[in-house]
Image (cartoon, rainbow, N blue to C red):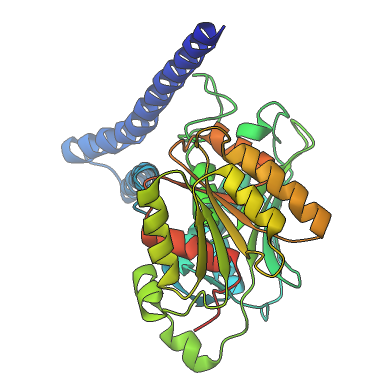
Length: 397
């Protein structure tokens, strides 16, 4: 049975690869066809000014489309290699929403889609990279417009809570099949991979959205009542304390600078690190202690459970756990941790460390009780950004 399961998984992965390569070839060649075709005609024939303008607009539109495809592929490559970099500062979301709306409005008007925005321009700030967050908003809006028919409606709302703020993008489009809904954020996955599909794209946009949101310590979820019923995507970020003007102007620093320049960023926090690899424990302990945290580093699930069971005044504020460990893995640990936290009425955020960074692994981790997963090899700057946001320390100096 294990052999049959492994063979079926390998065949499914191979089919997905072939489907993606076929889609990639189509999506890259289609804009090239229009670009090369019109370029050859403009060189060899004479046209009136209106036709020339139409040709140039077509070339420009298809070149931009191809640029976007290449950008998505490069983003996914950086994500897989753990090389995404964020320029963190205190920002408000309303200007980013306005900029994204300006970008997608022509596409909405071309389809006569009613594009609505509901938000308070005085909403509280978050800690994040403005370009990357605008990319998230643009991707969600573009996706909504793409899958909404003519005369439909797309709405974006900014919803502020006491500890978080959410961007919600809703549409009256084609909706999402319930069977595909769990895979909507998967890389290279699309609900329709056939050659007769009515919408282009590589199926990368939502995967990029999910990764960028998680790098900011946030979450993203998709909801749909089914095909033909529209869809709603909700992105949630933790809030930070309102900064003064001087802080807002001077806080445009890279992640590396922030973790280096603020050694007490995690001061007062107790972090439980569980990993069977001594070198990894040593690395994480050193990294977190340099930012002021108190680290309890243990090598097994059993040791961690014993510590939490016996701890009274040393309850950690955060759990960082490896997944693949001998005897009892990280899934066993998080189940027991959630039971202990429930009995004691505790809130204990948890970060999963795993070398298996597939979408199925991520889904299983979130369902098990982890808030976020960080793929190995661990990038120190991105790991610190996740910890800082997840523990609400993004506003500290």
